[in-house]
Image (tube, rainbow, N blue to C red; front, side, top):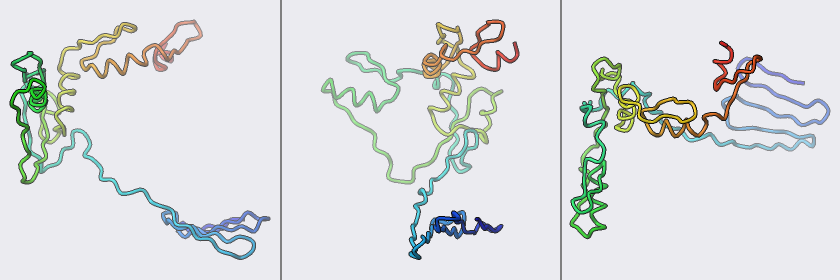
Length: 200
């Protein structure tokens, strides 16, 4: 037997067993149960902690500083080079840590004690939707990968299906699953994607 009302409250019983559960509200975290001998048990359920949502890509924080980097800067690799062994690094901080291994003087930059300003990055390609500051991307890695994917040369090619990628991590992720899924048509043709088998 069950009895529910439109506001989310109600009581449920199993009919023959005598156990009954009362729910005060669907959003409530307290559950009260009364069993056949008349005793009542109340249990409080834990809600997950509130987590702040990030801004979606292309929807930046309006108070953030807008940074415009050149294509050369976005595609640069190993801009900081060790004068001893000629090993290159993308960040000065990494070079400074490397210099310790050569017993050279080194210094890590300290953050200013003031307020940390949030930054967003626009794409240097004028025809791109992310060139508009209102559609800027929120981190440096994101804008670099975007620029490589949308405007860069596709250097990495899958040996199995000859698909090309501009970002090495995309190629590696594809390579792990390429050829593992097969969809067969009634005629015997094998497709890598289900959609292709339907259109066939």
